[in-house]
Amino acid sequence: MASPNVLTPQAEDFPKWYQDVVAKAEMADNGPVRGTMVIRPYGYAIWERMVAEVDQRIKKTGAQNAYFPLFIPQSYLAREAEHIEGFSPELAVVTIAGGEELAEPIVVRPTSETVIGEYMAKWVQSHRDLPLLLNQWANVVRWELRPRLFLRSSEFLWQEGHTAHASAEDASSYALRIHTEVYNDFLTSILAVPTLLGIKPPSERFAGATNTMTCEGMMRDGKALQMATSHELGQNFAKAFDIVFQNDAGESAHCFTTSWGASTRMVGGLIMAHGDDNGLVVPPRLAPIQVVILPVREGDEAVDAACAQLAATLEANEVRVTLDKGRGSFGRRTTDWEIKGVPLRLEVGPRDLAEGLVTMVRRDTNEKISVALDAVAGAISHALGAMQADMLAAATARRDDRITTVSTVAEAIEASQNGFARLSWSLVTPEIEKQLKGEALTVRCLQRADGSIPLSDTEDGLTCIIAKSY
Image 1 (spheres, rainbow, N blue to C red):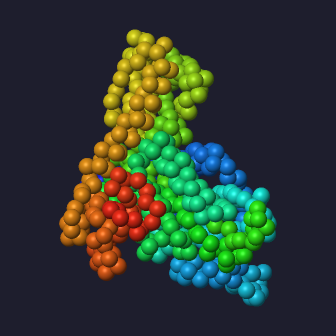
Image 2 (image 1 turned 90 degrees about the vertical axis):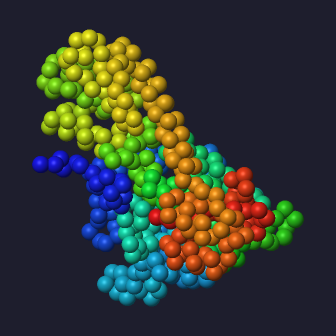
Image 3 (image 1 turned 180 degrees about the vertical axis):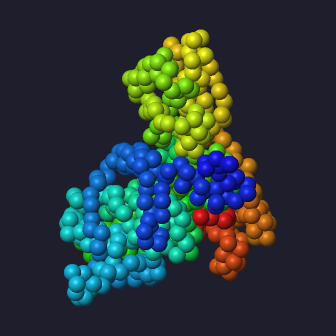
């Protein structure tokens, strides 16, 4: 009888593989209402690590955390016409509360530009109040027709930043700073996912934005995943909500605002960017458990004592370690930890122990290394650092190998069946974008020739990335 932990191979059915990993790594479960999810403790531990790393970076840019209501008057959204039009199909609306019909329907927060704009208008009076830099960690609801755990759910967790500035230049500069110093730095240095940075074409911008920047990652099946976005909102929301300040000349002016966010979709990106046929592979800097210690023979006093001492030594060296005291065969427990993607295993058996050794196993390569007991701390530290660097290098190589520079739309469509196509943006018209969508393709981002982020889609010499996406 096959082990219940056997996963569908990626090459056979990538979406099924993904579902298997989410379930068998005990990451999440479907919630009782279609499109909702229950995040299990291991999945939430990974999300908590993401939150801590992203939050630390956000605060370094000067933003402060706050919290705003889940319920938003429908009239707030209606005040920015493009915004409500963009979100209308995804809204969940409350019309009855306390057993009575409400005088005004209430929208369950899909994003908070409108409610935060209302309070920015109260809090901003003069140029001395600017920039106003806010962030909140919250849940949002966008009714999803084709849900998939972590990737697309009707309710998900995220952070959303909202800022007000005295000038367009300051707003643009800050949005770019968030995009590079917060999102891109986290994605590359912690998640080990290389991304393509660029701007969205006008057809793909956030509703109400004047510019949207994106971090696009390539998953192991060659599809794109939007990992994080930053939006310049111009004065659209400031005018809708009367966010006005007096400048140093005593003149009244509307602020320029931004918003930016990243969500539990990053957990899905982690799974699909690094996972293999044995399950998750979690980068060491992110992993809630960096090392698991497995006794090969439970109940052996010498083995148990050595495991306890190893755990204490690693904890003293600030390694996130757990000692497996679970039941079941050694093989079954090894498989369980492989599926969870814990970076390193220390296997402690009586034979190795008699020689003063333990076996260290790297999850990304399955390499087994004999390590002297008195050298474990140093070996672990070196292996964690090497694995983090190697995972980013491997993901970068996989991505770059599947980006094809093409010269025609037909070539872009062909290349996008197995990765990303890079094409001159000058060749893409609204009609071409419509043709691409008919092929289940979209323009993921626009870049300068050197791969940097352009200021607008009207710059000369831009290229675009075309791909299938999640």
